[in-house]
Amino acid sequence: MKLNEFVKAFTAEFEETDESVFSPATDYKSLEEWGSLTALSIISMIDNEMDKTITGADLRACTTIEELHNLIQTKE
Image (tube, rainbow, N blue to C red; front, top):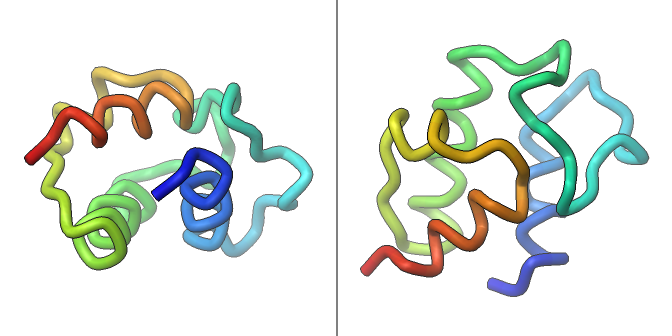
């Protein structure tokens, strides 16, 4: 999945945050809507749409959507 597609899929997991907030450089953990349920939704989306498995530690290790995308690309 290309970065721009990943940003769109990532954005879709947020119900209350305006789409204009999201870009590859977005610090997703600073978003008001970010929390454990959103994190689980992101992990599930990555598993379902990209057929990759990440952990909560992987999410915590990244700051931006682009960093997370780059990390996912290294997963088998």
